[in-house]
Length: 196
View 1 (cartoon, rainbow, N blue to C red):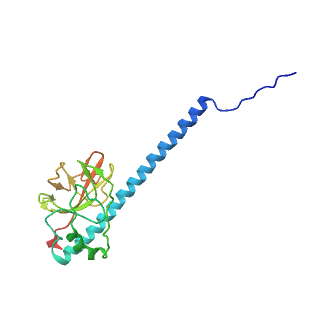
View 2: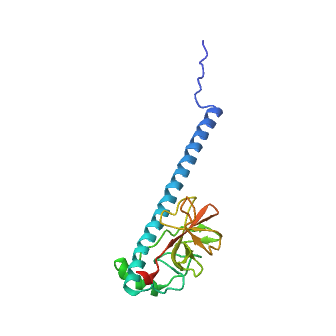
View 3: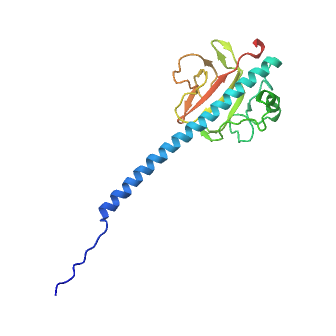
């Protein structure tokens, strides 16, 4: 009588390890791609909001001869935590509301916290008495921080130190005002309200 031959099937440990490594590589690629898409989306949201506030602030200045609450820094938008870039100011935002199609709440930039000499979130109207452009004082602007080593994407000027005391159109080919910790600080200059 012949003995029955036992046939075993299955994967060897080497085959299992190869499959696990391939799955891990594919997962890592997917995570990196997702994070890049998410970062670009958040940056685009901030840039779009900054652009709309630039138009609203300029329209307000044309009608009123100045910016609302002109000589201080305050957060643009509502419904998000504005960190280390300005302080919320309901009065200023309410003055701008008619120039933003009476939106309620006002549009907000990305609320992703960005590391830039501390954690920063959002966008702010900023008054910097020492800022200049082409040798002329231009203290009015919008400040915001974007994630990654990217261009600010709007008409910005270049800074020279972490305290951005002076601005100039001198070469900064990336369009970023300043960069630190892998992110960029951007400042969009607003026109002199008395010249509008």
